[in-house]
Structure formats: structure tokens, C-alpha cells
Length: 301
Image (cartoon, rainbow, N blue to C red; front, side, top):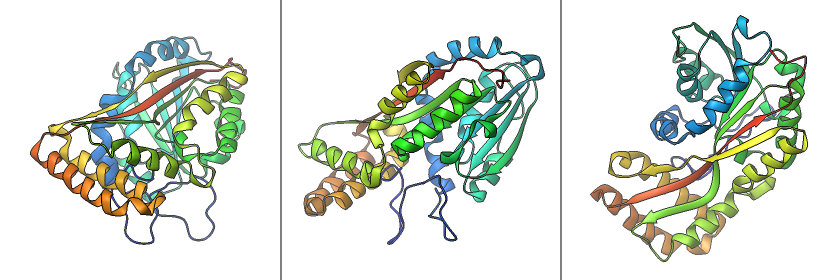
């Protein structure tokens, strides 16, 4: 997510586009950034969605053979580390990402046991999750992703919804940006920076903060029952390193979108970083988690 991570070097883009990139692929997420945000992600994810998910999983035909979970755009595997220990039964995680470097991290650091002590195994698949077909998810019990929807286009989310509903398995999509940020104490420039950042996220056809609404409609139109819960980051003095990196990226993306903000944004950023270092800054960065429960099909696990 552009603006949601460390400032990139000149010429780099902080966007992960999970689609064919030709011979020269775009820059990957830095594992250091993914590691920095993982505790905040884990604290933010909506636990309230797990009970209806567990009920659906418990009633899946063929459950006795264990769960098969496809994690799309897995990064370093934080979703698996959060979710696998919260689900009972044997699990086989299929980790999808375009970046072999991140896939290596995800496989090495994957959990080895479920909530009840059952075995968890993993495999990795390098590829373009925006081009999934139902065949790619044959036998899937569950599809997951984290911080993915907002870097997709309308067409790509429809492709994702087609694949998941075609497979008939539940889908848990967490930490989609909602386009709202609250900083305390407030500053007159907060809203202007936020608006510019949101516009930056919508560039080149990406949905950005509109993605969660579009995804809800896409899954509902295909017959799925959809639930959405808030999953905000709540950052205080204990998360100062994460807040600093997020601030730099957030303001940097806003200035990239609206260069006329540069002088005021520099003063704003310096003041915000000083407050962060002093432990007086609080940030609430809003996200949404989506659980879609498609009609089961014969292809579901």
C-alpha cells in the first residue's frame, strides 16, 4: 500500500501490484516493514468474524481430512501466524505471492500447530492472485488475504470474487483501508493530508478506500453472505517505530499526489514526528475486515 510503509528510494513505488509484471517486476514489500506492522495487524483483526467462520468450516464436507487454506498475497505469512493457531484441526496452508523472497520468509516462519495441537503444513505458489480461477482453488476450505483489496482494481476484485464463490469456500479478507485516520492532538492539516492520500490510493484505477464497499457488493451479487467488522490500528507510545514509518509514507504519498502541499507538509511531518518521539501522539488508522460465506459447491473441501 503506497503511503502505508517506509518511504521508498527515488524511482521506487511502494505499491504491490499482484499481476503480471513482465521481465522486470516492481519492488517488493520490505520484510522489515511487514515485521514492524505485524503486531498492530494482529491486534486489529476482527476476532468477531471467527465464530461464524468456525461454524462454516465445521460444516464443510470432507472436513475430516483437514483444512486447506489459500493465503493470497501472503507477504511474510503474518495471516497464517495469526489465524492458524485460532482454528482447530489439521491445516494445509497454500501461500500465494509474486515475490519469492517473501514466500521464503512466509514458509520458514509459518506456524506448525493449530489451536488443538493438530499439525499445520505449508506450500508456496508464486503467481498472480489477481488472475485466480476457481480451478486454482479446487479443494480449498478457506481463502484469506490481508491488506490486499485496496491495491486491486474493480476488475481484479470481480475476478477474485468469481474465483472464491466458484470454489464455494469462505473468504476472510482483513485490514482493508477505510480512508479514515484520526490523530490526537489534532492539526488543521490532518484532513487535507488524508484527502490527498486517499486520492493517491485511487490512482491508475486502484480502488483504495473504496475497495471494501466494492468487494462487499461483488460477493453479495454472487450469492455470498457478507459480514464486515472494523479493524483499526490504534497506535500510541508503544508503537512509536511503526507510527514514525507510517507517518513518513502517509505524508509522502499525499505530497506525491498534491505537490503544492510540500512546504506545509514538511513542517507538519516534522511536528508530528516530534510528537511521536515524545510519546504524545495517538493515531487511529481505520480498516475493515470482510467475511464472505458463499454458497457451498461440490468443489469445496
